[in-house]
Length: 241
Image (cartoon, rainbow, N blue to C red; front, side, top):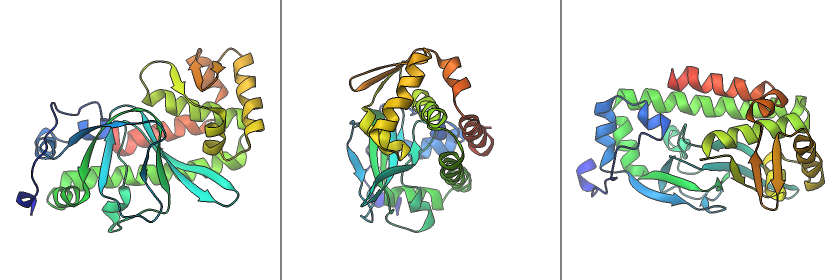
């Protein structure tokens, strides 16, 4: 089946994506000629709800948010950076997701056609195992976020979200409006303004129009709830250990 797909081929092994880098060298080599290098453009929508998914994406920098849309607003239910890939539903015999996938931080990624991805995974036990464990980690992340949104203060949740974003970008600057952050946290913009103001007064971030700078990473980690470290530990245990 794979012979029917023309190769595209990246310029170099995509080791900046931690999930691909975790594959055995032989398995990664099998994927290389069908990975295509693309830009992740800020606010670009890569999947619409219930629309057929054409590609899976492996970010090397930047991040993609999965957002549930409702008449009352929107809320983030998961995010993917250089630790994973988008389109996990394709492993579960589904062709679409109920969420919108939108680029929350610009960067770069490798993408692969869904048909090729499925064929490769079906032929490789190491791929199936690694990508299935990542799918579980992503599901656990969503469950952790639900608990976090119910149990922890907005300031702690905001710190958690900023830390996850900081992990996925180059440098200390995150291109982010407070309106977009309100979607990510599922609250109204005035509440986000107050939470970000509290973190700024503590010297942990500097917020300007459309941009947040992380100025004190250790302090931001102290301000975050334990969900940040729990998410990191779960991912490392399931995927990157």
